[in-house]
Image (cartoon, rainbow, N blue to C red; front, side, top):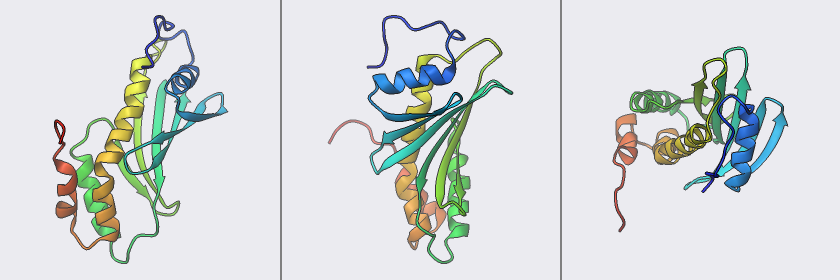
Length: 168
């Protein structure tokens, strides 16, 4: 578990420094891009996701973008994928999916707005990353069906609607 006996008080540590400490404690593969960004490789159920955390001091926001590459969409599937993403985004509150067609990326975005001197806590950063991974894992099969299958958006979404409970 990443929780240590003593963490700095929120606001005492730069959010990216804190995220780097958490990534090391969680044994996530990471690289510091610059003073304001950290790139992570987070293993999911379906694939490894690229996660970028970026600090934006102009609006005191810690931004997260989880991405994964997608092959070119099957012919005629762009409208189905857009419909699916709208349906997914109606059901989630901790971020939103978008498809960057030119870059060939599926993207989950979230921004943690912090108030001035208030900084992020280790728990908030951990929760951001885990929530992004959870959303990507939950909706990955539906996205694949919409992008490459022969189902419509409501049918594709059915594979992601029910969350499993317990153990088989």
